[in-house]
Length: 236
Image 1 (cartoon, helix red, strand yellow):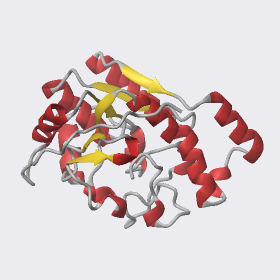
Image 2 (spheres, helix red, strand yellow):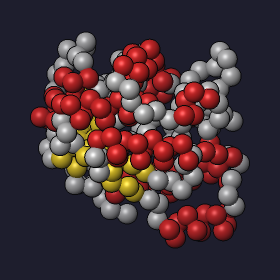
Image 3 (cartoon, one colour):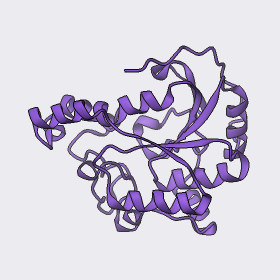
Image 4 (tube, one colour):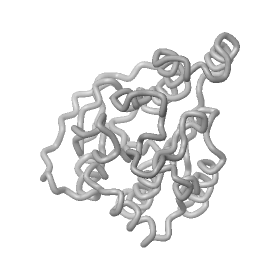
């Protein structure tokens, strides 16, 4: 696995009410090197791509193809590529690791226990992310505090110690669901059709289901686990 070189980046001080554009601008200045957007083609990521297209078009976009994504996710990726003439840097899991996992444990080992699920996420997501971030000074995410109990303490800009000390920039941390959807509708952005079918949060197909009325927006991700466990290792 490629190793990320340690950074000496410091976190800029921002007004607690700083908007997405201000957070992006501060992060780009503070980062020691190139900055890239991690895109899963959620409505948050689509909003960020539109904002970046306007204020920082030099920021590149990368995506992780786990091999288990929904067809609707690929449709959004293609729509964004055509709309913005967007170059998407795709990263895939290591072939041998996926083959070994499926030969030894089958296709749904991640539902057996938390360790197995973390193993699958590590192979399909975490390791490709490490490669995507090699040589980067920072990365931008669509994380929001309202998404999950695991994200309540999210900062606008933070040091990502897990990934070598580069900057992690979260421009939408304070946005509400209404703000996200109002922006997407006002700009006529392409969004994943699964959102309209009860999927507020979309990941790999076998690990995501529509939520029921009254459920938390992240209830459909790894629904067999407790809420405090519902991260894949990309965001720690």
